[in-house]
Amino acid sequence: MSARFKVRAGKSRIEGTGVFAVEPIPARRKIGELAGEIISQREARRRAKVRERIAIVEFGDGKALDADSDRLMRYINHSCDSNCYIRLANHRVEFYSRRAIGVGEELSADYGETHHVNTPCRCGAVNCRGML
Ligand SMILES: [Zn+2]
Image (tube, rainbow, N blue to C red; front, top):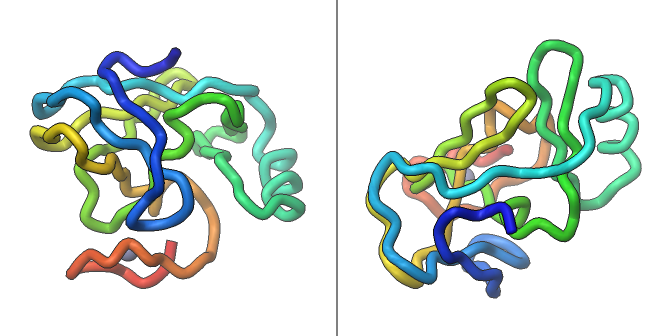
């Protein structure tokens, strides 16, 4: 288990499977992190092309993380008005709460700056940028 607070998978209001808080999460706390394989950016882009759903995060130094599919944290959906943020450090991808999150709330993070994909965004936020 890679989450520090109790979370569960469930049907997302944004897309597909999402992650929901089972207990209250205070603001600015580490919720969990992705686990997976560290690969080169070139390999990351090759994999991203052939997969429908990707959970690859580029670090900007030529390396990327391809997240394990059995980890709950990878199902955190993107939102342009997110309640979590992603911190990249030492080839780790950590999720922190941006604000206090209540029981039953879906967790979301802004993937815009970390995932290099070009897909329409359906987050529904007032300030939605329209694209991932
Ligand atoms: Zn959006």
